[in-house]
Image (spheres, rainbow, N blue to C red):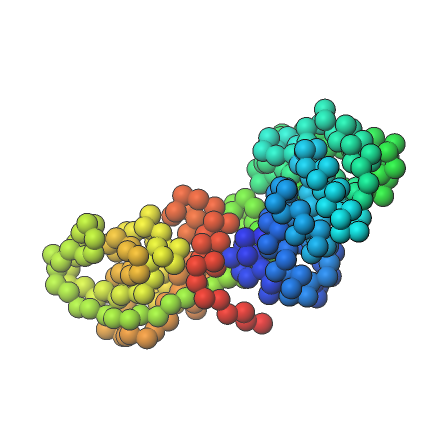
Length: 345
């Protein structure tokens, strides 16, 4: 079950879902009902799980669109049953078990009561039971084994309630790659589908070939090149002052585009296949880079790579995440969701 929530981790939910469907995806995972509705409108016919749970306001939309609700507690069940009956259909749902994530879901002690509550209500059917790993990106953590054990222990009695055909799923990208015995009936890869390892640069360094290939490339073009004398201070707050005669290229990118201010005087970009530094404060729509060491061959209109490869050099989302003190997931969502996208075969 590919995860295509957050607009496909910034890569374009509908386009990615179509690619994954062509490659045999059995189901899709979204966060919100509206995402599932968009996938249905785009012609996606596979089951679509609304993973973050449901509330009363979204139940009719979920049922009418033929989406699969993920139930996180018993409170919503009577209303879900009523809506399903009003729509003259039976709704297959998945139960989200909190097997150690500590964020959301039915607690193990409440699991049997929840199953029984569903079984007593008309128009509802249990199709799956799921949980989530909180630390599967840390290969040294003992937590992951504990979560897997709790999930298997809790769901072990499900056959006693006629759920022997129920789909059990737990493994995210980290669970898929690093946790023996976690694949169960279905897996839910997310970040790995877009070319990154759940444990970031360390994951890539420790992986064996063939390596995952990043899918996103973020590029812009130079809009101006300025020649400045030594001692010129640049941009808001004058965070950078030239120490030599300098050539400064101006890029039409800023924090509006997800290129955050924290990257000021820290990030690098690629021009002519070489790294050049970001200098000065990144503003809403503009970023400055020092191209002095490239000589006078840099001109307006030339391509600049903020994420991706150019020539033999590459800047990855993991590297940018390190500069931003975050993770690749956030970088991809920011860049992809805030900029125009073009799908390339």
